Length: 484
Image (cartoon, rainbow, N blue to C red; front, side, top):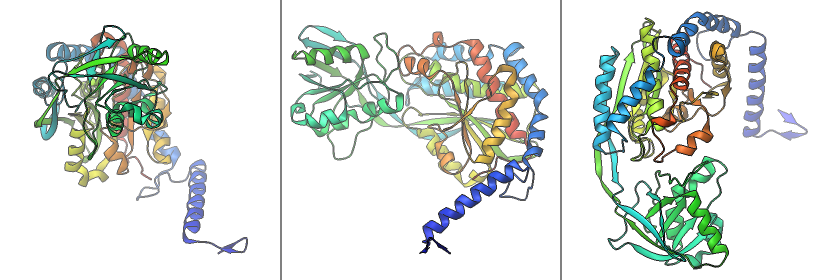
């Protein structure tokens, strides 16, 4: 084939065929032709819409039970009982293992099926005692939170002058000035994904230019002098230095001091230690499918948290609305065609350690997963569902979300990824996550403020209803969600 007198390359030919296929695919959807193109089914979009519309009464029953009926506030009350009793649940801690034991008993007591624990190995880090005191230009005791996997300081601490920077680029430009100092990052907060790189990589970049320690402005959308912790990563071949987060207020104050030419000296003490990996578990429960039990719709949240606050918002709420979704479906006597599987992940905060090992154990059956769902962005009033999948699957999900018109939550947004489900999404499995008020979420994220006081029972009721309707309908459709 020739175009404008030139022979097409193989890559160009493939690209044109892809464009042609996409156009034909979209035209076929518009004309009512088959939406499932990669299997034996030849069902049209209209037929799928009609099938989903028949779930209107079931969706209303789930909504009424969760938001207005006997189950209202149940997920909130269950969560409060756990986090008030157990507290925060850091990877490798006794609190986490106690929470897992309690949840296994709770799921069995709820009458769910195939309740079991799947063993995993997870990191075990403890922060120990920690402090930071500004010695010059004045005495000021600072609030800090050491970052996960950080090493500690010598017992006497590190006392050094401070270099304040606002970006990695500035650090590189001023690299010679950083040697033997404590680097303080006062990076602006535009959004979480842009700012979190300083928490993740700040210690490594500071160590590369000879710094003794790094202090990072907390990655937060709002602060009332609240430090926020989180994981950080060292790099092979780069010296490990202690690293912690400080408050937005202190980072900005030191930036102003430095701009005025003040010499800033800090004494940093951190008793952080890492121990050998600990034994832990992912917690699993199911409602077994009535027609295709080998096929799975997975709902999930993570049970671990950081060691500050109560881990109520991150991610107690997500874990408990996932449990609540199965409870609501069971209470209504519903049994979907394929299996609804609840997984409460462990060690998500350390980089999805529990979910990674779950994926390795189950990935041979990835073709049987219709949808993977994760709630880990708060359980405030949802603004919609984030979704990653094929165009055909997105159209189906839009129809499913239309069943939630009674509570006015029908948006299907992009990027349904999540730390614990990304392994499956990369394998081609459609993925969904719950989206709500991210400004509020990142105000309390990884801080002492992550407690039940942040949670709202009525908003949790609505979030649980969304989670239950979506998971049940997708699990009960005659066809699995189509893939790319």
